[in-house]
Length: 208
Image (tube, rainbow, N blue to C red):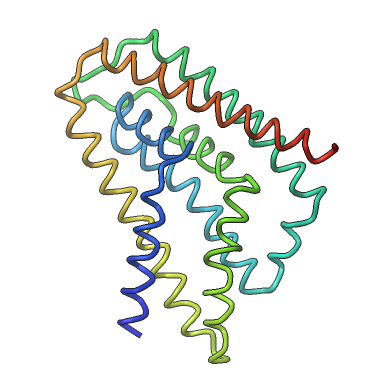
């Protein structure tokens, strides 16, 4: 069991290193608002990951591949990524407080942004396509113990990645200045707009 746990821990850690819109938002939040804001973006995404694990366990994952469900998720992703991109542009005009005081930005808002960013067919297909078969095969022991070990290993790998990345960003932000952070926010906004356009294209493509 320990070997299986470590194996899937490393798998979760390795796959979470893949850059994407979630990583961009986490980095931006950690740079501007500190460790907790960045980490809560990741926790929002992990909530969806945990939900997908639960759906796979109960055999409901195929529901997420229905065309109408995919269309709704592509549209939601388009809207929220666009909104987050616009907010990033607005943030670029605001100075960053390096004093170490608690950020004024709502932690709940950071969590919500990560939660809705994770609701996308791209993330769903990634989970069902890569982790789905592994989790389903782990149910073969009947008791579900192996399933829990595999799922826990994957989630812990993702969690360690998020905490490690946010720690690095948080402690390196003191060496940056307002101009650099403004540039980071603008670049992040452009990347998020790019993902938003991609989601919007996929939504429209569903009806062609």
